[in-house]
Every structure is written in structure tokens, then in C-alpha cells.
Length: 304
Image 1 (spheres, rainbow, N blue to C red):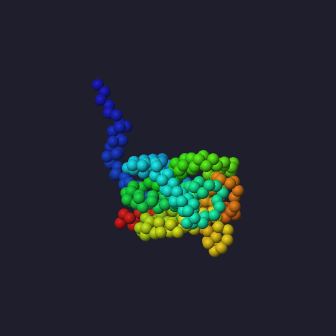
Image 2 (image 1 turned 90 degrees about the vertical axis):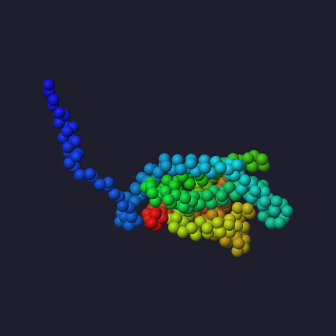
Image 3 (image 1 turned 45 degrees about the horizontal axis):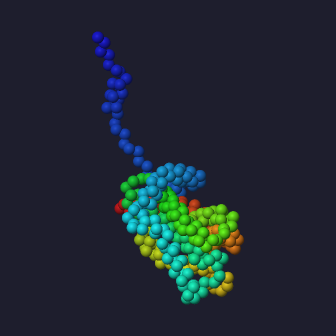
């Protein structure tokens, strides 16, 4: 009988027994490495991580949305209640002549409801990156994954919540039998600019929010007066010092243009819209780079 041993298998086993175990490959990410590689490699890595984070962002978005309404008695109705209460309150105050709103292009309840929805979308876009970082600090300290995933997840929630609120606006427009111009078809483009501006500010503040809780505590104190300086519940003022402040507010041209495209079809501040839009898109890219540079330090501070 031939008892020939399988030479290849034996030699490979012996080689594996003799070979020393290979240590796991360590990759150290520091903020300095970004500055040592200026130019296209940075954007290439950012783009690659952005694409790699799509699936995780989708799963996080679905989980957060289901958790958002799971333990609520009214559920998805909470997306409608705030603008309804705000519109009802200001409509009652205007009809009672407690406040002098002035003339609006569409019936005042529809005007307030649409404007409130746009303002809430901006606020959600601003809060999204901040909430993402503060809520996932512990997870990021333990697991290495593309940091863009948590921001993309919040951004997806902003669009989903806007879609839900849009049902309410359509119902109000049908109730008041309002005709919409053809420019309503390009209103989502202006809305995206508004969301980009909010995401830019949120992404800029997110690393600081990960280190200091002062950011999350101070933000509501800033947003309340900011709302009063934005033409959400009143038309754009045309004269006086208050009108100057409102026109200097960067949210004003983005919100007003979106509203005008959906209602009148006439854009009153095209120059301001494009200036703020340019700042928003360039600022978002800058904030993204700063986010990538700062997050290793934030994670190190959190895990220490």
C-alpha cells in the first residue's frame, strides 16, 4: 500500500507552525495627517467615506425614526401639532388686533403654517449634526466607522420629517383653495439651500458640542430670538431699523425665496438668496473638513 502523505498540506501546516504570528495592522489617525496631505487625497478620502457610510446611515435613520414615534401616544401627529398651534395662536392674535401683522400674499393661517414648517426644517438641519455627535459619543469611542454616517442619518430624518409636514401644508392649501404657480416645482431646490445652510452651521458646531454641553444648552436661547428676527409669522418689513436687521439675517432670503416660489412665483431677494446659498455650500465643505480634523480629538477626550 502506498502511504504517501500529502506533502503540500504538511509543509504548509509546518510553515504555519514555524511562522511567528503577525500582529494586527494598526492605523493611527491624527488631525496632523490631514494637513500633511493637502489636495485631492483629502477629498478622495472624504468622498470614499461618504459613500461607505450610506448603508449605516440608512439603518440609523430607520432606527431613529421608528424610535421617535414608538413611545408616543400621538405618534406622527407630533409633526403637525407645533405648526398648527403656532398658526392658531398668531391667527387669533392677529384677528384680535393684539399684534399688527400686515398684509400677506396668502391667507394668514396658511402663511404661518408654511413659514413655520420651513423654519422648523432649518432648525432640524442645524440641530441634526449636533445631536448626532452628542448622542453617539460613546459609540464612536468604541467602534471605528465613518463619522459621516451619523450626520447623513440626521439629514435623512430632516427630509422625511419635511415630507410628513408637507401633507399638512397641502391640506391647508386645499382648504383655502389656493392656486400655486409653476415655480412650486423648483421650490424644493431653494429648500435644499435652506437645509444646506442649517447643516453647515450644525456641522461647524458639532465638535464643540461633543466637548462642551454649553453648546446644546445655549442653542435654544439663540434660536428663540432668531425666530423673531426671521419673517416667519410676519411679512418682510420694508422700512426702519428692524427691516435692516431682518434683511441682514442670512435665513431670511433662503426662507422667503422658498415660500415665494411655492406661493406667488415672484422672487423678491434673488441676490441675497444666491449670496447666502454660496456661503452655505462653501461653508458646508469647510465645516466638513473641520469636522474630520476635529473628531479624533473629540473622541480621544471622550474616551479618556
